[in-house]
Image (cartoon, rainbow, N blue to C red; front, side, top):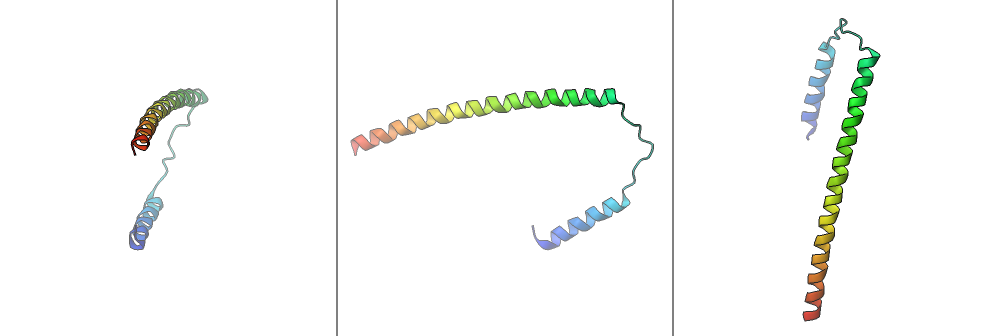
Length: 81
């Protein structure tokens, strides 16, 4: 990204921040709602972590199988040559 684009983005973002107004009438979140959302987030993170672990395990199995095939082909090529 060139410098002129960076400066333009910084100027636009600065103007946005200067014009942003905080809504003072927002309701304060009660602790029950906060902890409910945190529990849901924790469960979602656990689920996604399991999915990532499963994907990594599958990738490892696939990679190991591929390496065995490649090593076998290299051995066959070496024996022939």
